[in-house]
Amino acid sequence: MLMKKTIVLLLLVFPLYCGYAQENNLLPKEEPLEAFKDGEWFEFRIHYGVFNASRITLELKADTLDLVPVFHAKGYGRTTGLARFFFKVEDYYQSYFGQQDGLPRKFIRDIDEGGYTKDVEIDFDHQSKIAKVNNKKKKKKAQHSINENAQDLISAFYYLRNFYATDQLVEGEDISLNMFFDDENYLFKLRFLGKETLDTKFGKVRCLKLRPFVQSGRVFSEQESVTLWVSDDANKLPIKLRADLRVGSIDCDLENVKNLRHPFEIIVQ
Image (cartoon, rainbow, N blue to C red; front, side):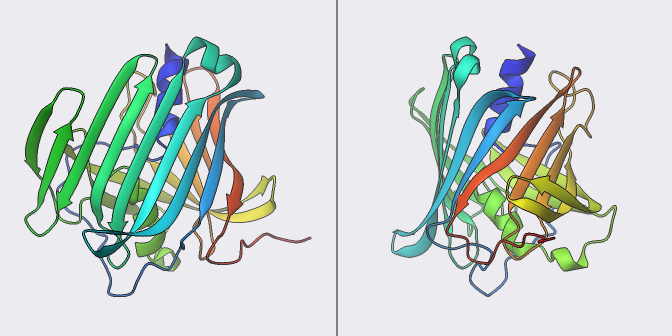
């Protein structure tokens, strides 16, 4: 059961939140998004030691929604190998967010996690601070208030890469971001732990080391059980995520990448 819950958690990459949102210290800027571009593609491998558990892909395309230029992000996660035999996961996530401000316009979640299914669409109206939730499975529609600059699960990943001035980060400083997920507002928080160089399949990569705050209890023993490494370059690539469990740890590593906006800075010795 612990492995099942952890696989589902890591398939989402960024659903590491705690508490209710009160404010957001990340504000939109006037320039277009600069950390990524049309056609960017990632693949991540989730593994427990040498045991592969699942794969995640993230794809980004330029698009329009209601005549507004947006980026259309598609996330797909599935268990693989032996893990799939024990617990089949097929998760599809989509987000349409503004090319200018990075704010989500529409979010789609269509998942099947061991027989647990959801089919939900969320339309964001940031001017009115309202999220319109369409639960297709249950045939229910609802409206919820959202906080300033609220992000969805996928758009938050791109928003953080683009809008936070990492050159001004101080070790021990906390970063917060408003999110709306599963009919609720949350405050996603992470702490900057400093810089570290990682050995990866691509070579040595200088990284920012971050500590997302997660809900402790059923999967994690405490709130500070997850560590995230992001490339210390203009791309802000998610290089590695490690979740320390009660027994051992599970890693999520960047496996393949295409069509980056900026050069991938790798240390050549």
